[in-house]
Length: 288
Image 1 (cartoon, rainbow, N blue to C red):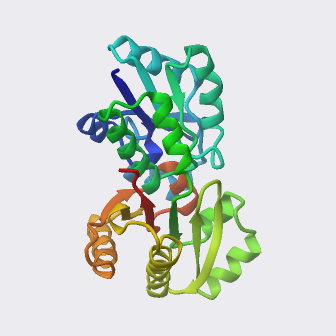
Image 2 (image 1 turned 90 degrees about the vertical axis):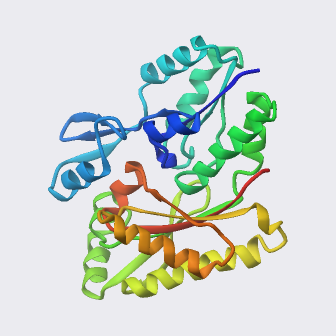
């Protein structure tokens, strides 16, 4: 069977990269001052942050049912027998549950995997799906494998400013004001269904150290009994200067000898809450 692997741009995979990987990418819509843009199509992260920091009214949204159905129909007409669609976690958006409902009209030809991931681990799920499809697995088999491994991952994110967490209702205005005065930088975590508080530190340097410690703890304690060759560590962020992204990736790679650490841009659905200059690291287990 010919299986199409599809994901959304929250995976850190955008249209051009998806073409090179053999992955079909659904661009996430972003509404800026009432106008809809599509991540990786007519909206770059640079232009997104320019509008975000410039005071524009910004909200993120899920793909419209029409856009999603058109993409599924077009993909099946291209000669694919089935589609495995890997959207962002159902705990962070309604896009997954909407896709599951829409897929019911496709006689099991479209399988939607709710494997509770976004960004770095979501990318790992896409790579797993490509490998499983190449091994001859059906879309239903791939869906089951991804959902069984859903929680074998962690992400830790530090923000540069509390302003956007306040705007998104993640913290109160009073907490943001106190945090700014005391130079407190929160570290957030995504381990499945939602964005939660993980720790609070003073200063960027301590944030970086704390994230590396968290990844090391997961690697040695939480995943300590796993085959080390199946573990992956990656970095992500909303850096506006590419050199800052390179430095963060290099710092994490130096902390974990033997791991080839890569870097991804955080998608707009997360970046709208973190703002620019956020940095993150994640750990996940691959299936094969």
